[in-house]
Image (cartoon, rainbow, N blue to C red):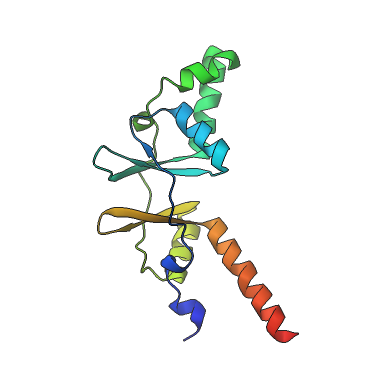
Length: 149
């Protein structure tokens, strides 16, 4: 069995996950995405349980609706009035930190989901995205190239 087939999500996941509360607003998510250069934010409830995801696609979709209805000059104000609970994505898959990377990668591809929250025993412990897989691929290619030299 190769190292790649034994690798687990814990080997590449981001452990310091940026989250928001479901009572925060669409404006909050847009700002956080911009500051941290991220496209997915796990949304937690008052008990710190994962209740959904807000994605860049959701933020853009809602911004377009607001701009078309109220004009772009109202964008920030109107986004600040929309609770994340009203727009978050409920239909998403999660994985555990022990999930094999091959299985998680196949799930990302088949679901066309840009990220998978990592939940162990009901607690959000990390997040793994297609970017983590690209980084891993680059590392493997560089290691292979270095060993061939």
